[in-house]
Length: 495
Image 1 (cartoon, helix red, strand yellow):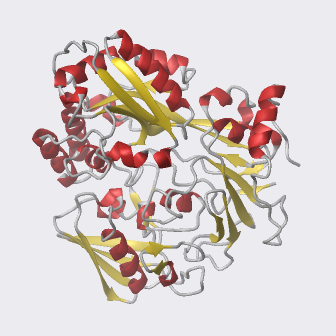
Image 2 (image 1 turned 90 degrees about the horizontal axis):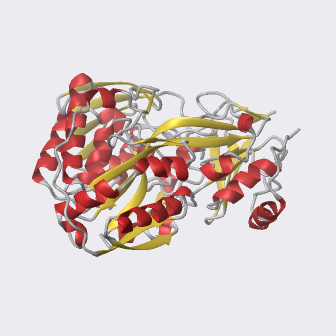
Image 3 (image 1 turned 120 degrees about the horizontal axis):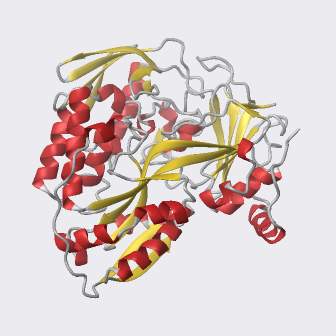
């Protein structure tokens, strides 16, 4: 029996009901009991047709349909997945593939399939973030062994290969220029249907190498509106709801939500290439004007942590290594007009933007806001169309190691360099962090790179978020993953 949580006040309930009408997928086409399938309300619709070469890869991972050669444990160390073991020899790593693995179309996992998937990813434009600055080639040694070689010796190759954007798919996925994951994964659930940006369906794959999933399938609905997602949990329309907005968490039964500090930082990126923030003194003025504590209390209702750096409490080692950073002196904004962009997909960000507008105007800036859905604003942000951009950014999403995030966002050739930063000292620190072997020395190099970025004021970290996930009372075994890689797993089911 599904147990609804506390009800919304009537006007809000009616509004959310209108948003949800006809929204959630049915299961008639699959022939399985609706009561047994796991119904999931997700925040962001697919951006690239669920191509694993985009951020859509993390949806495929959260649905347990596409898998990688390795996976990460809670400490960020690489563990076996489609590969059972690996060893390094200079610039090359040799991976032994798991026996008895089949793709959802019945074909076998072979070295040739791995070479095809990884080569396609390495040659993609843009590259998957995890391969920023990395030249990678893959060769089959025999049917069950592959060798991955990088241009420079790279201690993080196994962690890189855990990125969902480097999932291994069947040959049928690669037709023409697009990558279609339908029926092409290796996980316990087979992606069977995608309805544009509205919904998707997955059925249990009975020949999964890791055993039989407890749920017969998953029905996914994309619900960008946070109030509607929370209402879906209250009304019993959804079993699992990701990214419950802070404003809605207080209206839900506390037994239905889980809150976990996550490696995600809410950061104000400042455009260092043109406009007001080309001037380091004005970047410093913006930094000094920001009162992050009031944003945590007012917007996040205390469900976040004030940032001391780019890396937060989900990486507990960071605070112990961090030292004070020497920054530029502040200048006088003198009424300079700036435009701040952000997006609506994360419900708190427009509120953060409004709070920053007030704080920066008080400091002497004139502030305009531009707020859209993420899919409609990302390209402009990456092109440097705004003076500043507010982003909720995962800091270890791809490799379990923050060096990749720092490179992607702040290296001169980083693929996600919203700040348009091109600083030789930062590039040097980032390259050193990336080349340092795993362990204490690498952690110190990462903190040194963070300090180099902070010294430029190209990014002002404001707060570290906590993931708030809603699970209905009759859901068992849903994953609560701070890296946002897992959600519905082999063990997830509805009682």
